[in-house]
Amino acid sequence: MVGRRRGIKAVYPEPMRDVPAFRRKLLDWYDAQGRDLAWRVGPRDQARGFRADPYRVWLSEVMLQQTTVPHATPYFLRFTTVWPTVRDLAAADDGEVMAAWAGLGYYARARNLLACARAVVERHGGDFPDTEAELLGLPGVGAYTAAAVAAIAFDRPANVVDGNVERVVSRLYAVETPSPASKTELKSLAARLVEADRPGDWAQALMDLGATVCRPRGPLCDRCPVAPDCAAFARGDQDSFPRKAPKAARPRRHGVAWLIEDAGRIVLIRRPAKGLLGGMLGLPTSEWRAQPFSDEEAVALAPVAGPWRDQGVIEHVFTHFALSLRVYRAKAVAPRGSLLGEPDDLGALPSVFLKAARLGLKAPGSG
Image 1 (cartoon, rainbow, N blue to C red):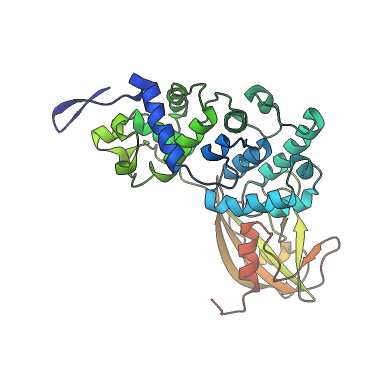
Image 2 (tube, rainbow, N blue to C red):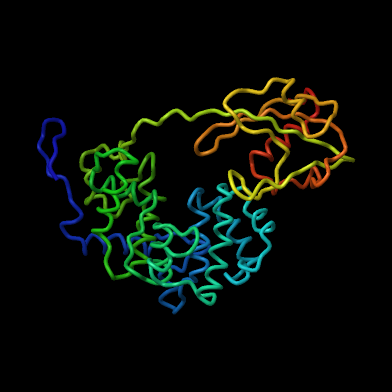
């Protein structure tokens, strides 16, 4: 790989020139510096005969798809305490699982979690299949999760590429293609480094390197075991990788949420099973549309008549749009078929409705 910096011709390092040596450096670093994670069986424990539990690997990977290790860890510990095996999760009540998932986002993944657990029990006798192809046949299991479970739980030489790995590879090879168009190229480059020796540890070593050293901003190149092999480091512009395409503006939607107090308790509804926040508890709400609602519309659309008071607006960002949700509050009799929750026990609500409930319960003028 050849390039030019400050008018001097330079040959940039290329990890493919000696893949075994490159892998050895990174795996040695992982053996000494790998993270201690609740779901991980590290090299020392493996040497003592312990093996990764496919259920715990799968559960952790699903939880980590849209959040961080510190945020996911207490959820993982709670899930594995209440539902310690895939059979336990498969037999769980849907509502209890959805409530336990609140705060991890993407509630469709919680529904897929249950569907996958039940498929493992019904189709495979409670044992996760051990190949990528079979894992891909399970509900909600995509290419990344199938590769991760195959490699980490079953030591299959699978190409496991998450955001951390993409960042590491983009810097190793100084990939100029901007994200997300670079995904196929990055996956192909990462595949060159996969071998049959210690595939699970290799996947986790790359992920750990990206999470702790090759960080999105301010990479700690002085601590990197493979910095001499990194093309971006040789160029001195590692902070500029991965390249990013300009982000499209996120559209904004508007809605109304009604906080109804009935004898000191809060009216909640169960949202439809399909769609955004499907199956979750929430406040009664209007549709979410492009135009704001007038005060007259908000009162006319309310599920019950009442002395409605405008409590203000909360802002919430979903993946594909931003939401401005105006909250109205009134004391009234709960509509037939609604559920009631205690004001101090709303923590299981999705974050958008938890924010709306907290704003709605504030006294006027309390800020």
